[in-house]
Length: 218
Image (cartoon, rainbow, N blue to C red):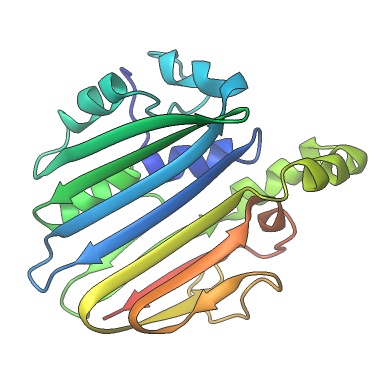
C-alpha cells in the first residue's frame, strides 16, 4: 500500500460501505509502551481493497502479511510481532500483534492522520472517535430497504475495543465533543476495572444520531 490512512480510520470508513468486523485490544504500560492486538474479519468480496496502491478515492487497509510489513516499516517505535490469517465462511480473519514503544507509535498504527484518536499521557486519557458527522452523512447514501437488508445479513459483525493498564481503568461513552452520553442500546460495555471494553454491532453504529466517541482513563 502506497497510501496510508491509519488502520482505525480506514476501517471505520469502510465498514459503512461493506461488511467487516473489527476487534482492538490495547494493553498500555505505565511508560506508554504496550501491545496492540487486532483481529478483523473482512468479506472476501472487498479483499481487493488491500491492493489498491495509491488509490485516492477511498481508504485502503492492510490485508495480508506483506501489506502489514510494508505498513509497519513506516511507523517508528512499533513492530509487528505476529500475524495469522484463516478463512471462515465468506470471510478472511486476520490476527495481528503489534508492540509499540510509546503512545505516538500506537496512534500512528491506529490513526496516522490524527483525526480519530489522541492520547494525553499527563492525565492518562486516551480518546477515540468512532463516528463523526462525516460518517453520519453516509447514511443518506443508502436506501432504507437496503439498510434493513444489511441489518439482517450482517448482524453478527461487530466493532469491539478493549483497553487495559497496570491500574484500574474507566471507559466513558461520549459524543464527538466529549460530552458523556448513554451507550448504544445493544452495546456490551464494561466501564470500570483492570480491563474495560465496548462491543457494538457495525450496523448499530448507523443508528447513532449525534456521533460516538470513547474516553479511556487509567
